Length: 166
Image 1: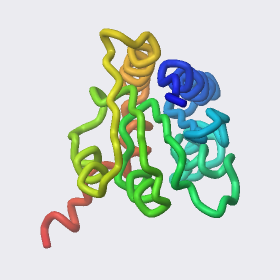
Image 2 (image 1 turned 180 degrees about the vertical axis):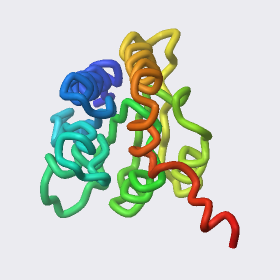
Image 3 (image 1 turned 180 degrees about the horizontal axis):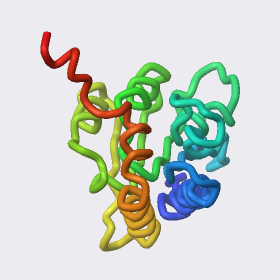
C-alpha cells in the first residue's frame, strides 16, 4: 500500500504548528507503519515546553510510538530536514524511509547524504506540488525570523569556537 505523503506531512505540520503556538520550535514528526498506514506516533519539538534539548519532532514521534521490536517497516515524516542527532537515531533504529517537507531552512544537505549513504530512502517533497511542504517551509522561515536566538539554541547554539580552534 503506497503511503499518502501529503496526508501524513499534514499531520506533521499540525504538530509543528502546535509547537509554535505553544511558544516553541515549529518542527513536527510522524512515524507511520508502511503496511497498514497507521500512525504509530506523532509529536513536536519540546525544547521550550519541556526544557529538553533532545526532544526534536522526530524524537517526539519515536517517543510517542513507544517500544517496538523494531522500526524496520516504518516511514518517518518530518517537517524539517533532520539534524545529525535525529539522523543518527533514524539510522540506528533502521527506519528505511524518511519524508522531508523543508530542506530550505536547513544549513546543508549533509544529513540527507548521510542517510542515503546508509541505504535509507529520503524523499524531499516538492514544494510546487505539495501544500503541506509549502506550509512547513513558511512556518519554519517565520519562526527563524521571529526567534533567531531560539532557532540557534535548538540547533546546538552554533559552532563551538573552543572545538574549532583545536
